Image 1 (cartoon, rainbow, N blue to C red):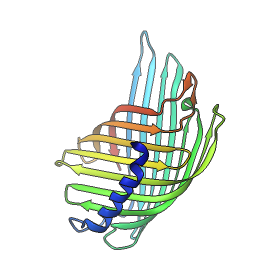
Image 2 (image 1 turned 180 degrees about the vertical axis):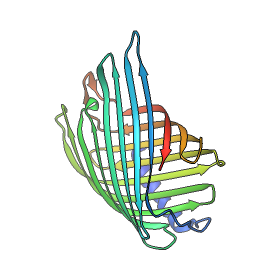
Image 3 (image 1 turned 90 degrees about the vertical axis):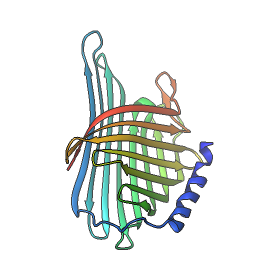
Length: 249
């Protein structure tokens, strides 16, 4: 079922982009630097000593017709002084807007991932494509991106490294219930002849003040061609639930 999602979703993005009007006029964004840091940390002592860290940092630089975005994710877990999870992701993107409404743009994206406990030495990708603001009201925003790129994957133990041309699809949805509570959902999908991957993030946020908020989120990842884990083949699916503190700057 998942294998046929790209064509269906891509058709939906194109159809919405052509047919759905933007529900309200664009608001001029704050130019310059802005960002958001999110972190959840848990430390346990006693019979079992463990540490868990999930952190995400987003930084953007916005100009009149361009926007530069970066994302850094870190996941670290240890138990009894033995590390059992360590994953790093970096995502860089440049957008070039075609109109004053900032609802249609071209993008260039590069992404790198390393997860040695999933036998992944490096997963590097480069993509170019188009983005479209599909729907916007005072409370909701839906944005989609579709592009084509190239991916290079190197495993640590598994003798099956590969390169492939792939497609990239991204959807972002934000909804604000009121000044305090909001819902966020994103989806990132890569598809190619050697591997296809899906990642979704679902979160509910509660604002504490203008700078701080708390978040409860769930991340789901699917990889059709994973590496070899230390205790056998790595699982194709991975899910995690996080409680985090968010700081906007």
